[in-house]
Amino acid sequence: MTSRSSGSGPAPAARRTTSSMLLLALRFLGSGGLLTYLVWKANPATIWQTWQQADLRLLALSIVLQLICIAISALKWGVLLRAHGQQQSYLWLLGMYFVGQFTNNFLPTSVGGDAVRIVQLGRRIGNYAQSSASVFMERLTGFLALSLIANVALIITSTNLIGTRLVSEPALTLLAFGFTLVAIAAVIASFSAPWLLRRFHTRLPKAARKPLQNIADSLGIYASDRGTMIKAMGLSLLFHIIWISLHYVCGLALHIQAPPMIYALMVPLTDIVGLAPFFVNNLGAREMVFTLYLSQISGISNGTAIALAFTAFTVRLVVSSLGGLVLLFGGTSMHGDPSADPEPPTSAGTQR
Image (cartoon, rainbow, N blue to C red; front, side, top):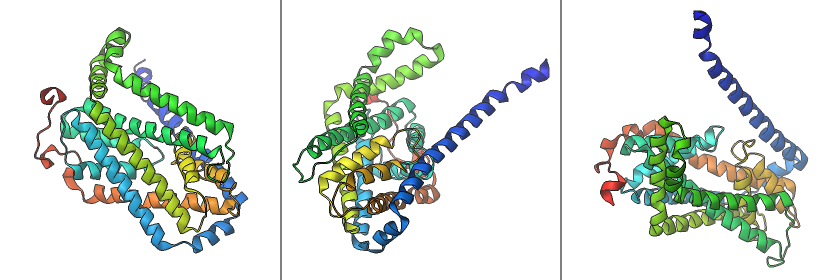
């Protein structure tokens, strides 16, 4: 009896590990299989020929644009933190954002970087609720801006306003619309989180009530801080405009002649589709969406569309690799050491 009970502990953990590995393998197979099929269908020789003609100066500009995107994201994170009375060093936030990007792009997940930022900021300020709320709202405002641009672009490209009427798959249109509804619902739930938790807290395990209430109260602060939310949404829209422009510049570098509005459609849809759990770092999703829309433009082959998708992804990898250097040389200041920031951590209650 003793040996049986002692051996029953690790078994569930082992099963969870096996399930996680299996799901990860399926994600790689699904994402990699779709990518392989698209490359094979497009003819790899065409992709290579497109790369050989690339304008390196424009590719360098795209790297600069990617750096600006990360700088804007770190700035928005700081704006959201100040709603809680947390004034953090911008350089620290920027460094941690690079670390988050490194984790997202070099690990098979799109949320690992967020977890790293939450943990490191939570250690730094001594408040994981505020840390979680700031990262969650930073993501959520980005999703709102993303869905807004995607839906506007879908409407415009379905007409002849850009000279070419694009045909969208009904599934993609429904996905963009559904994503918008989910993002709006998430905002409403976040703003009303304190009220919802007080009303339904008795249905939660006792051990989880206090931590969840702290997070809910931290999210609820944004509901009454209209100025912070306006700034965050403005920075989110600016981020996505520059992110779309980066892809347009990559297209120019590869001598692709396509209207900018097509990029305003393809890029947000790619980011939305890539959130599906069976894609790894948008691989397969990006190439599928780019091929679908760019192939409708005269003179643009599937191979050219995939070459553009690979180029934009490479720019993202190159810039996010700087996060590895931050981890390597950042020292204790990049690992959430509060002594690195002269301003002591404070709670929202004492500052507001």
